Amino acid sequence: MALQDDSGVLNSSRVVPLDGGINFRDLGGYVSRDGRHVKWGKLFRCGHLAELSDEDLVSLRALGIHRVHDFRREEEQRRMPSREFSAQTTADYQISIGSMSRFWDILLAGKLTALSSHELVVNSYRDCIEEVIPAYTRFMRGIVDNDRGGSLFHCAAGKDRTGMAAALILGALDVPRETIVEDYLLTLEHFDSENLLRLVEQHLRDADVEHWQRDWLTPYCSVHRENIEAFLDALDRHYGSIGNYLQSALGFSADDCASMRAQFLTD
Image (cartoon, rainbow, N blue to C red):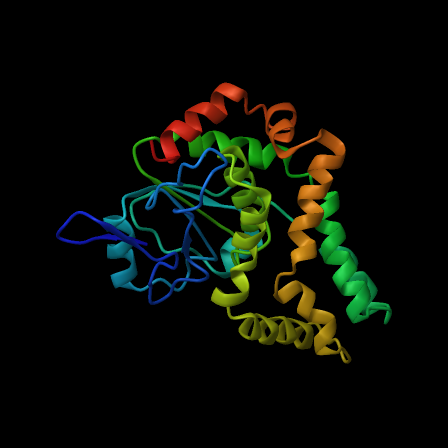
């Protein structure tokens, strides 16, 4: 969150301090290849918005967030409805990571291990690049079209669907790959994976699953470098680069990227 002191100097902290914020971070401050910086207070990523306090709603309105993009499926939205704060919300993306159903199938068949669970998650990042094209096409257009206010995008935990969306935004802004990976890995510092583990275990009990080991669940409740690298590697392998994916798959042209950089990078 960028705060301005009396001298007009910006003092930046990536985490937005909210009572009910879930992995709530500002993408500002990252350096593009040409030395410009991503503007603070324009692009925000997070988990669900169901636990925001009344004070949080006031803070978000003060940040000037005009657009919210909710990647969660309908059942997730019903289970944990977002608190509204006068921003326009797009909530029909319905993004699903492809291997989750296989996770349940393998678990119920008694064949899940820590290694196979990890591989399922990594493969879901690698294999989803075609599946997510319709959703991320509209999302990227929504980001570049919101030239007057801030944009907030989120899923349930703010790590998988949100992490890939952040990678596409930072890629469009010509931020280096290693910085994209580092932003993804910040979830390790700012998300309570232990709480998510407890929630998943409760879901298993509710489904009358009798046996599991915690290390089978950890890949779904945290983040790993291999995840985001699998996504980026798949873009490189099938499209040549993240830029080519934006242009060829998402219809996000060179002019669109130029407009986005003019909008979100410092002069």
